[in-house]
Length: 137
Image (cartoon, rainbow, N blue to C red; front, side):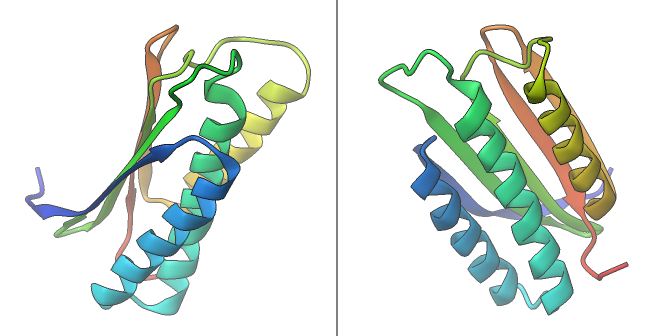
């Protein structure tokens, strides 16, 4: 197992549309500070945008008062570990466009990361953890 060099960034904001841009910018700035090349930063911004938008759109359908969206970024020897989590309803099977939209997002995330893991529990939130290579493919 690769060693982490520590959590480089930890953000907790409400799951609202404006939070996606704030998180994307903070993650990009931290990646630049870590010396990553432009293509890796661009891929990271795409992944963060997609994952956070899924939380905003799907995690909290009942409009609760609190809508936590948490993002952690940690450098590892073999890449950046990005974790996006919520405390929403979890991923539930449904018909229509929602399943298709999630599927397309996961295809994009899978194409830009070296691996990812999705954990979801009905009513217990969702956590997406992925590894982004330090150099562009």
